[in-house]
Image (cartoon, rainbow, N blue to C red):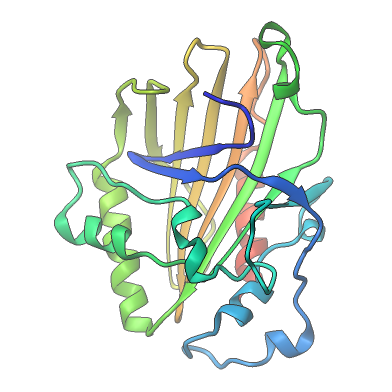
Amino acid sequence: MTHTRLLVALTGAAVLLLGACGNGSDSGAPTPDDRTTSSPGSVLTSEVLASALVTEADYDGTWTVNVPPDSQMATPGVVPDSQQELLPKIELCAKAGDASRAAAEALRWQAFRQLDQSEEDPIDLPAGDRVGHMIFVQEFLLSADPADVEATFEALRDGLQACQGKIPPGEEGPGESEPMAIPEVGEDRYGELTTIQEAGGRAYWLLHNSLVRQGSVLMDLQVVDIVMGKGVEPAFTTEDIGTFLTTAVAKLP
């Protein structure tokens, strides 16, 4: 694996790839006007969705917004058509049904943000001395007709469930995906934890993925903890992951 902030998140048998990023400071914090331009069930603009993304101030600890160096986001958090291909993709395994794979392929996220936890980065140390955590949060939002959003949620959930279980070794691995309990937020929700061993066994990835449907909005929230070094324990409990999620959902219009 190349450790250059080329962020690889594996969700069940879905592979999410994000282009190399550098840190930025544009939070895109919501304003009162941004948060009051919609009614329940209405289809929301990308700008309204972006105003609801989590920011550095929403979580305990010190965080920074990770912005691609070639970002063309005129409005912080809004994903232009020209950068859709740079966002992570969900590639479901062969056990997922046709409807699930079609839903994953058709996804077009309108708003996206990545927050990096600011601490000493073990990646910068020699391979044998890497001890600690590399932590980031990714939030994806889209809005469409509520019936379409419900169908998309169900197709993605079914596909992810079908791909649960052991993940054979590949570029990284092996790994395993399993159900993850999450708070009862939104109208529909699905949680999954994927654990992936890094090649060479020097680290492992904990990918806490939450998919939530609320009216016309579909949200995917990934909390990623890369654990490095013998004896290092995961940074987050199940309760902590629930707090990440409830905070993000509470900001949705």
